[in-house]
Length: 393
Image (cartoon, rainbow, N blue to C red; front, side):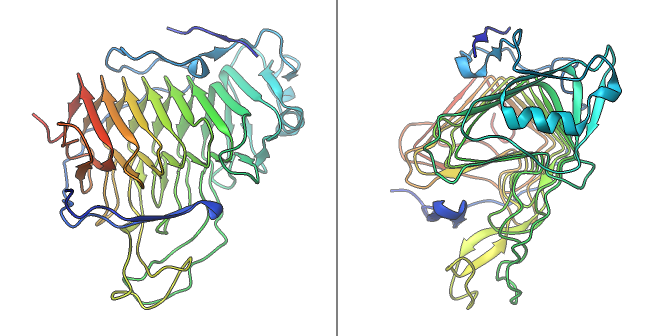
């Protein structure tokens, strides 16, 4: 498949990662600040329609963030009419993998998803909606799953381009045993309302994600729209829009042991709806969950969430407005913790305003030591260039 060009630290966080189960645990620094910021209203465009209005991008978009040439598709879903573009035909096409396009007529079409579409993990898959196709989970079903048994080993990639994924919803099943507060409440699963990926690599280009829901409560679960765990080559998002997605953590996009590179995209009105953040304290909770004395039930990362060893986060040309962390939680715009303090955070040509939640910045090296009021982070180094970040002059 070819791609073509398109236009001495204070209270150091301790994170005990459970990579095999895709779950992590975080202690928030004692000097972290909880704040509330008045939200501003931002109207976002639809996927595959008008391009988001964002600052000029000066970063170089990598090859995996460029559109795949779909002129010779493996499968075309539909025969030219809206009625021919069905879930059944799409599901059959996805099982084959390769390049998938649609021929549904001249108008836009919505395909109701009636069960999760399982993406093959042993080949590359490209799904191109041609700026006309919406996959709708009906607020009942997770839309897609790429679930490999390995961890940071798979070379294969899923590319979503010119498509909308709306109203996906997970149904968590692994409940945390009920214990008195502040012991953690909620769920240990239910990540990725629109897309869950384990041991895969992801590109999202010119697409929209609206109204997707992950598990609503739990210290480690998250990803209202997208959740990726254990990715060898990470996640690249270009020119895409995330609106009104929600989950316990990572209201829109969550990554665990997965690099995140996000370009020229909009995040608005996404919400991490958990509460109390996540921490470990045997003095405050005498009971274990996932073999730890967990307290707090999420709420970190209103728009974007990342943690893991030696993973990096790059935001370039993005607009991140009016997203919310949960009560007593952190990072209304971005929550990023590098377990081993080897991951870097770069914020370039980006606007973050009107986000709510607590914040802190801890860096191991460098002279830039404050990421503003919309970010909670521990990282090796912080780069901010040509950006407007709430809480910074």
